[in-house]
Every structure is written in C-alpha cells, then in structure tokens.
Image (cartoon, rainbow, N blue to C red; front, side, top):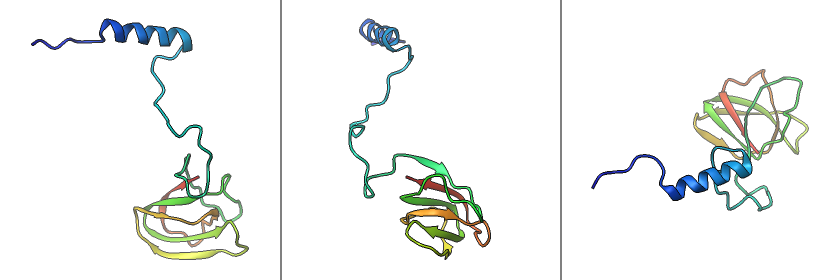
Length: 116
C-alpha cells in the first residue's frame, strides 16, 4: 500500500471551511475545562516568570511556584506581613505557597515560575 501525502478531500474541505469562518489556519486545541471555574485546588491556568524585587509585589499572586535552579528563597506569603526564608529549596520543586512577593536580597534560587 502506498501512503498518501497531504490532506484527504474531506480534511481539506474542513480546513478551508474553518479558515474561511475564523481566519485562522489551525484549529484551537480542545479544552474540556474551559467553562470550569478556577479555585485554589484547580491546576494553574497561567504561568509567568517571577521577577524578584525588594520593594515591589508580584503583579499576580501565585497558587504555587516552580523552582528551576535550587537555593534559598525569601518570600512574603499572601496572608503575611513579614518575609520568610525557605532554605535549600531543591531545583525542580513546585512549592505550594500563595506568594505575593519574592525578594531579591537573600534569594539565591533562580528560574522561578509563578503558577496562578
């Protein structure tokens, strides 16, 4: 049997039909949870680089954060008025703390990703 290259007639029809309707060249991925409400125990809906600062809070409070390169992390949790230091956090860890600030001074961990 010889394999066919490209799209079948039926696949081509639906691709062109979709393109004409939406102006997009590809289909959106199926997201069965798009209508679900967000909660603290739901998986993160967004991920963003955490920028450390000694004076500014994060633009979005996290549900948790990922540590790419291990080390110490000085942070302020959402419900706290004081900073705390997490010592020797292992790289590749996901830390389940709602954080509103990561401080530059004292933080030696790197490649931090916020999950919200």
